Image (spheres, rainbow, N blue to C red):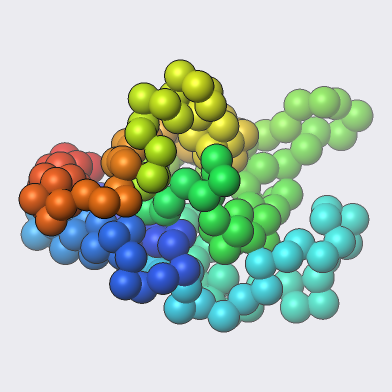
Amino acid sequence: MPKNITVILGHPDGLSFCNAIAEKYATSARAAGHTVRLFKLGEVEFDPVLRHGYNKRQELELESALVEISESISWAQHLVFVYPIWWGSMPAILKGMFDRIFLPGYAFKYRKDSPWWDRLLVGRSAHAIVTMDTPPWYYRFVYTMPGHHQMKKTILEFCGIKPVKITSFGPVRGTSEAQRSKWLLKVERYAALA
């Protein structure tokens, strides 16, 4: 069944392997009959800093590019995030997008006089496709996947997005074109089955 899919590239470099993954996913999903919107955060002008936390709104609530991304997240039935693991987690540009867009009233809502919250982005699934220079087994068993837990548990599922799948490709550094081609074939299959 065709879906509305929003793909967000969280790598600031448009020449990265993450860019190739995002492009392959978008192209393959369109070929499978899905409607796709692709955003490359490295090409988006926005302030990634939530300057006052949740205490008060920023002077410029959301730049027009962030409004377009937030509307596309609301529009989508399936979200795809493509990014590298840097220092154990996502790049600052992607974290900044979450900080600025996933605000109370949009992504979640705290309940009055309660430690609990309402999840406002239910009805969507997500797939994070992540690259790393660390071998994925080492990231899993030695580092215990802090960035994956952050994305899945404390961002997406916190806001009601589930199921959340995470795929790790690595180590990327020093890989052959043949290995990268194999990974891109997997991405093509993921997009067809979205």
